[in-house]
Image (cartoon, rainbow, N blue to C red):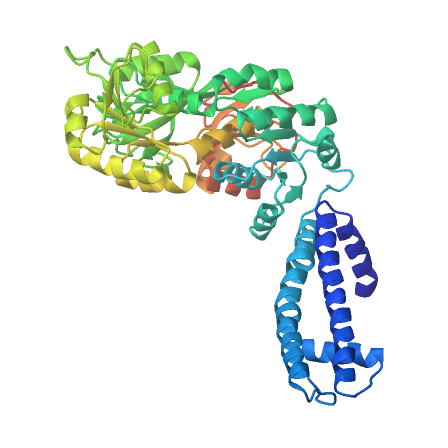
Length: 580
């Protein structure tokens, strides 16, 4: 079978682009070699006649090949000096051509291209017929791979499209499902069944993304296409090309960081909504809750809000009545919008005199830093940006030029007085350095930090950041929330809200009898009954009926425990989650 397959491989290889040039080079080399062998054979006859010997033409070719290949059997030799000099010339040219040039020419112009062709064939160029509901991802950067990992973790089939065979092979070795093809070729998306895909995600430069979206839209008019954009001006162009959703991820990250700035007069920040259900978070720092237990705070009795989780420097825990709240704690609460507003008024207090004009210090004036500053300006919170560049597009927002690691520059920016420091550079190593430095200078300040990759989130928390927002997680959250509205909503890199429809195992039992929290570490936020009524923070005695939809919150491990015990929802049809 292998011998039958080899000729077809070679024929396929010979018809590839670039093969024609290699064949021409090889042909020229072998013609030159044949001319040389013929010339040496003729000269062999002349010199043998000069010595009074006579040989056939076949013998001349035989002698030339044995000398050039350094075999030298010794059965035919010259006795004169001209003949011996000729033998040396033939021998040296044979060493150069047969032992040096021929192997390298063959390897460079046949063997290596053939191996590359074989590597390309290892990466599939089409997906099997009948495939449906898969997600096609164009891109291979760290943030794209993080998205692929998150999709796989939630049971969503994803295929990475690569136009570079070597990159595709590397990704295959890492365990990713990969397909090869030109990004701007309509046939590529037809072979990958883009028309039956759940979504196409494009993570490339704005110009390349436009071409990709345009080509994919021609192949699959109905597929949902989502793309990230670097330049806000390219948003409309991508939409005109056929993109359904265009995300300015850096701006969204800047907005999310700005929302988390602690102000005495406003603390709760809404993370997401499911119909009437609102999930929010609120830092305890500098509030009346610090140093108290949840039982002492009596938040549910006073506002109706349910504290469903507590973050403390990156560690998430399900709270109990005796959970102690510290300055570094961040509460995750659930309730109706009215209950969240009551909770916000309860823990907020008027700004201290003179503190309302103290600016937030933003380290880094890139896209995220500028987005943070603009969002703070809309909230009428003053800010100052520290950046190495002498000129940045900060508008009316003050800008201090200098190195953020320079104490004099930080003092000029007001780090001794500010209540909040936001670190926004794209370099995670630099962010860890600046977090440690800022925490040493201001142990009492709120420090918000950006992480480009999820793997550095814990390191930034350990360095002293109160809250860390990951760009990679933001991308994954946006795509997954778009894929599965009302079924799942990722709140950050660990925490998510998901839906489960009651089946036989929980039917007819009360919330207390089920013991979901103790068994899975997930908290039930709300129940939507068969009439469509949403019961937010249901009582422990609430009885589950067949078809009720539960909304639960937990980290990825808790979600996995729940799904192993009770199963998963298979439909993605609902769409009442607010993902804005």
